[in-house]
Image (tube, rainbow, N blue to C red; front, side, top):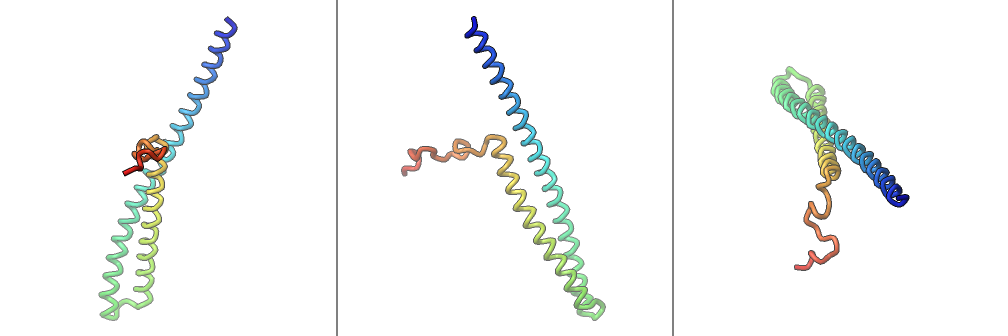
Length: 125
């Protein structure tokens, strides 16, 4: 009976540890998901900002030809557009990283999920 009691205690401890790991994994996944969603929103806003800045640059280019806008204003607008383009690229890179993180947390980013050889036997062609 002592061994049975010890086995029940061990099983209870293992179950508690598993529950804690599941809770931690779920929290990590939810945090990554919210970060991913925020990045998608930020990407959308940045794309809209780029569209608006492109229109400003186009308008200032026309008015610069007519002498109504200074070259400095035009250059500042182009600089803003370049900065927004850079921000978009950085956000897209971060989005790719969070995609990988989400796949890893969901358990889909492993050798089986990617259909990769683990021991080298499947690499023969």
